[in-house]
Length: 242
Image (tube, rainbow, N blue to C red; front, side, top):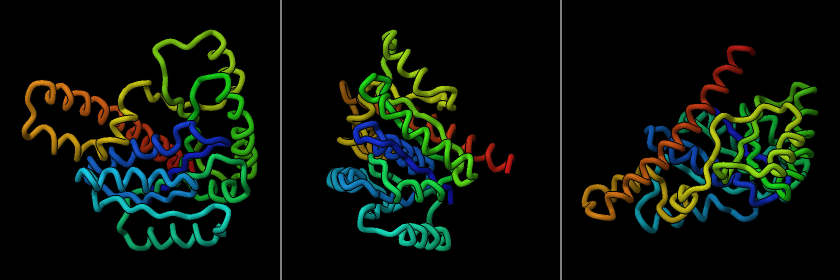
């Protein structure tokens, strides 16, 4: 079971969305995932409920909530170990609260890959440096797996200021080649549920504008699958180096 975490020091960077994109790709591949939400907003549960209402959720995905302020790290560890032992899940997606908290730092030790989603804007990138410092400290202690910055809500061209802030904050830290574009993919994940299921339920009777909708959903799923393929490649490369 591959464990992937999403981590930042603030909310609204795209942690939940990035992991739900992975969940859509995992489900469309016919695999399964445990979605562990440690963020009080409980976005995973919101996505699940919305998707169930429109028949676009899957039993291959299971959502669990752990309150990061009330839960000990031992509970997370035992939950991940039980999921591993069950043989039910190919992935565990760990959504950490958008704060700098001891629970998060401990939780990162269980991830084979940590994604740090950030929007390339000055107000967002100001929080990137401290989060990267936590990762670098864990790397120095050999207590964290691979880590990559994942830029979200990417526009075709960044402003000069945004580019400067981005480069200064990164300071050589590795970045995902896949970048999440500023498109309707975010709305699709929230409003239409798992993309593979949404495509199957729409295209059977699609006509006119609905055919264009299916085309857009397929393009969104392609983005999800591209992200998952890169995630898998990074974890495989790290495993060969270990």
